[in-house]
Structures are given as structure tokens and as C-alpha cells.
Amino acid sequence: MDTEALYLEDSSVRRFDAEVLRTLDDPPRVVLDRTQFYPEGGGQPADRGVLRVDDREWTVTDVQKRDTIYHGLDGDPPEPGTAITGELDWDRRYAHMRYHTAQHLLSALLLDAYDAPTRGNQLYADRARIDVEHGRFTETDLADVEASMNGLVEDGRLVTWFTMDRERAERELDPERTRIELLPDSIRELRIVEIAGDEGPYDRTACAGTHVENTREIGTVAVTGRETGGSGRERLHLELEE
Image 1 (tube, rainbow, N blue to C red):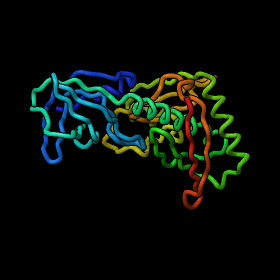
Image 2: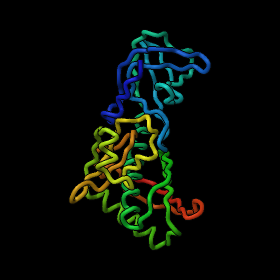
Image 3: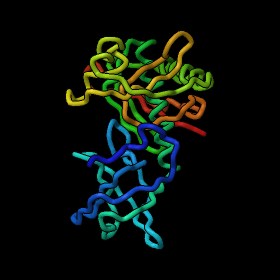
């Protein structure tokens, strides 16, 4: 039985109930029937938090998705069939939501303004970076990008997500924005994250990450620098303030 990924439906839930399906001892891990813990992937780090059973508590040290979602623990795991309560480290999760949404917004902006498609990204709880195909950004470019990003944030654009059949998505959506080709062929139903625009979507991207629901939640964006990311590529760094 696969784990139900609750975070795909609602990223704002901090606590959930679940049942232990399987346990592994080396290292100690559990598989749950449902989870709000996001597994590492797509440039977004894994969630942290705790699992609780009555008066016992385990720290969730890592979350990885292989054949299903595995929750690494800091001690001997609870037995299969155990009812548990999971609670996220919310400050960490919410920071990832803000940074991941900011990355989507930045990817759309750079594609529109500089014809610079995104080729990679990495998020943390206090910073992020994005790699794009482009020649060197000037200091004026960086200032313009920062000002434009903060304008988009202040617009209070809605962020929503929905599922779509892969064949339909490949037929109807802009491949430069959705980046469907980066996903394994085995994924036939896609989760599309959409940022609202003035006339139609500002951005649509295939993504299984967690996001805020309004760009104002991102906070003030600071583009903190650039570096060469390889031949014909630039890496931009950003930080967010509350």
C-alpha cells in the first residue's frame, strides 16, 4: 500500500493522524498510510518534525521517497498498526513554501524578460538559488529583477494547483513553462502549480512541491548576487524577508 501524500492537496496543514504500515530498523524508518511530511525532491529539502504515540515522541530526521515515502526516526520505530500523530516543524516548512513559490515566480519572470529558461534550483529555509540559461546578468539586470519580483509579490497573485493528465498537459500547456520533459515517463498524472496573471496564468509549472496560496506571503525579495553556472548559464541567489 502506497502512502497518501496529503501535502499535495493542502500544504497548510501542520498536524495529522496516521497509521504505521511498515517499520525498518537499519536505519530506523517507518512507512505511514498517509503523511504531511514532504520528502526531499525537486530542489526542496525534506520536512522535519515529530511523530507521537501517547507519551512517546520520535524526531523525524529525514523523509525520502523511493517506492513509497520513508520517514527516518531518531530511535527504534513504533510497530506496524500503531496509530500516530505527526507534527511538522512549521517554521521550516513555511520557509520552504515561501522560497519554492518565489522560485516559480522568478522562473516565470526570467523567461518573460530575458528568455532565460530555468535549468535547476535549490531551496533552503533561509535562501535559494536558481540556474538559468543566459549570458551574464549585469548589476542593473539584478536590480531590475529584484524590483519586478517585489512588484509581483505585492500584486497578491493567487497560487493554486490541480492535476492534469500528462497527454493533455503536453498537448495544451507551454512546455517552456511546465518543464514536463524533466519528469519520468512513468508519471502519467501531473500536478500543475499555477500563479495567476492579469490575463490568464502568469506561470504554470508541473511541480509536486509545497507552496503558499498568495504571492504576498513570499515577503520582500532580495537578489543577493550572481555567479557563472557553467557555459551559457547563470546562477542567481535570493533571500526573503518577512
